Length: 110
Image 1 (tube, helix red, strand yellow):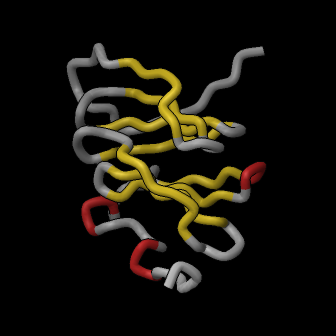
Image 2 (cartoon, rainbow, N blue to C red):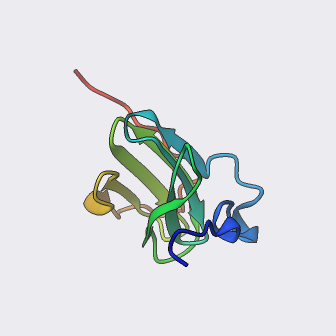
């Protein structure tokens, strides 16, 4: 059963269907990453098989962005979080906002 693709996990859940920034591609790791409610789902971008999932927010995620091997997420819980896409582990975050973020952008400084 582990080798069978699960098509219901290949697209976001209904609360995220109308979000413009809920998916991203990480070319270096061959991942297609999307937000599904408060969960992050990482698929192999070639086969669309689920590689891993993890909880990305306490509430609904509004936006995600990818740079290199880092994923930035923003959500209704007024946080910005950065995740390592190789491991799916939390790296850093910021929680001092008054309103939820609706977009995420990864900026690289030299």
